[in-house]
Length: 317
Image 1: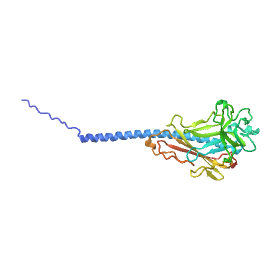
Image 2: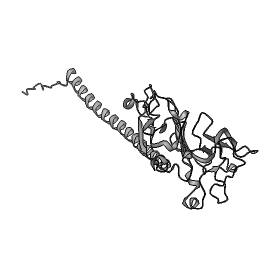
Image 3: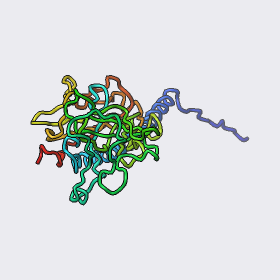
Image 4: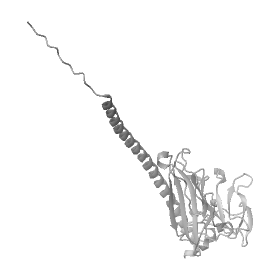
């Protein structure tokens, strides 16, 4: 007689609690991995943006330093520089005599980097009747109106700004190719190098450029790297000016470059758009006499500053 035994099977498995524990552990691990990936992504974006800011800021300061150091070369020192203060809400503008129109050989031959207007200050609305060949080489050293250049700046030797304007733009208009956009008061006039910020781009013009050429910032759109501020303070006769929002900058009434001892340049560069997780509390900072922004945004800002001693100004000789 064959006896059949009943086989015993075990149907035990994971309980609901055990499954929940496993799911919880897996979610923690996956969450940590995701967080690490996101953090690395943010770090890469931030490092890329700050690296671009560093490169652009340093190159701008280098260019500005070179031009400031050359201010006053080959001209009467009152023509060397003018700082148009933007007050507590706008960027400053810088005018310098264009030193590229003159060299040591020209100076040795008795030429200077400006034209003589009169022995007394006159109100000038056009340069048409004056000699534009500064260095005696037979070419126009101010502007070639045939090139369409309508952004050439000039600077004069005026100190008392309550009597007239110190700077102007040459306008090419056909009938009078050297009309000025505003009257200036001058005994001497020189072509000028000009710096301004326009639409978050730093621009520079001189006697050789067909208009204000962009140096840096805003290449492709609102989210690209921007140059958002240019601020200039200076020390004259031992006192710093244009460095406090609560104090009026005196350059609106008098400005004598011969009194200047030091110039402090400040450029504010804003990064490309960043994730708000990184930079939600960042804003444009206060620099010199311009107040900072009171609105947070998703950008990072960097201030590049350098103090320069203009070697050609009489105050340092």
